[in-house]
Image 1: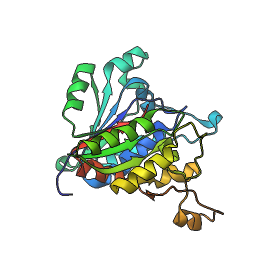
Image 2: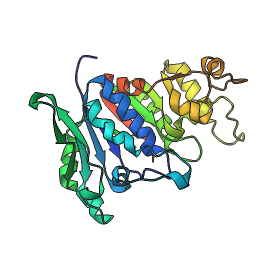
Image 3: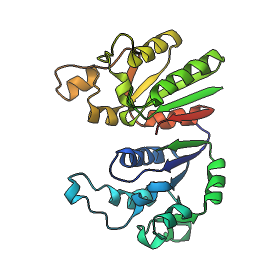
Length: 135
Length: 130
């Protein structure tokens, strides 16, 4: 397993209601240990996964949203959020968690992980991938 | 060409697992190789030998088992997803103090790393799900 492939984790579903988002995040965290080129994409209802201030107390199920802020610690630097999906839901990047990664080449400066991209730009990102795992 | 297959849905409720089964058969028939089939989310429910549908319905778990036996397929059920959904092999039975196990022939339980490894090793990764 010497070659590095471009892995993309494509999140399309809302964080609660089904288990896809939570179990997808588990795949991302495991995948990060394999030293591949990693991108995480949020589109359609998947953009809700990154919303700030999630509170699941009344649902009686685990709020796993704080885990997204750990993605930077797993050296995941490329998080793409589809612009149209945000707009269709009345959201902007300000409604999302501020996710960063630390650039060790620049004295561990914190850099934004989230890139808001259009549908066309996202198509290009997906086209460049070797492996797209869709959730 | 080497294929990695991910199955995200359980049998019967969703067509994805039968479609994956048919796809794997077609891949093998065309002379390609299937590196691994990885069962995730409710897809782990494809791997219980207690599946017993009516006689005029397809037995999806048995179909996977037969295909694995014929073609020496590697059918892997995600351990974390399996634990949530009660898919148990001998080892998991002992570890978790359960009174039985239900893993079907030809399936094995392992970690998510097996999915990533399959993506690395295969020429094409194909996901079946919603």
